[in-house]
Image 1 (cartoon, rainbow, N blue to C red):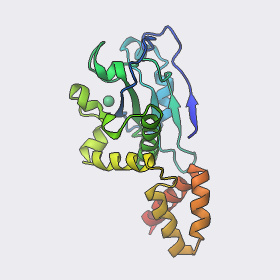
Image 2: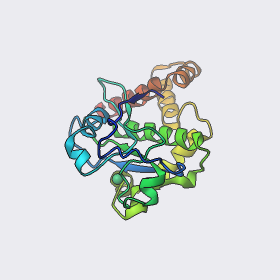
Image 3: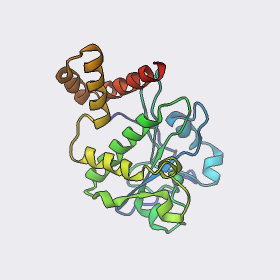
Image 4: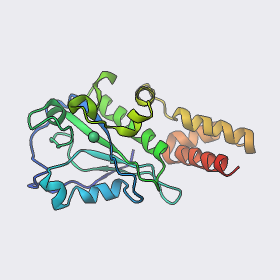
Length: 221
Ligand SMILES: [Zn+2]
């Protein structure tokens, strides 16, 4: 997983420098911003503004789904052992003090499904790194009742997201959706599935590209 580290500078109000307890949880958010260009890079830039510092607002990762022009991106805004202010449960709440926050982008010029796949993979990576089980993934909602992640909640797909995370934890090198895409192109134009599975297991972006191309192709028909 290629993660771009772009940390909020030390000393800013939204980087309190408090030691994160555990971490004991991963908290999932949606950005709530469907505007074009509201991708991971834009959120990284936002976190460095005075506005974000004054709220104060911060979290650990933002994941976007890329677009036909560019690959999906994951930005990291805080070290994994520092507290961010994202859970809305107060200065000493367990959401803020013991969870790693992941924001999933909604930008309309990006691919949402791919953003979710990457977020699931990142969540699985963090859970495994800190030896946490699937019960340690929380919605922002669980900490303070906010309707977040609003897309996953609104579309009733939280369980589906968890299943995806579990798939990655079980070691799926090529996610189910990419396998489906490979099967699709095998039927359509006769690609060699074994070759593409191997490619996709070595470079995640190839798997996502196949999914994206499949979706565009189906839309255009
Ligand atoms: Zn949230």
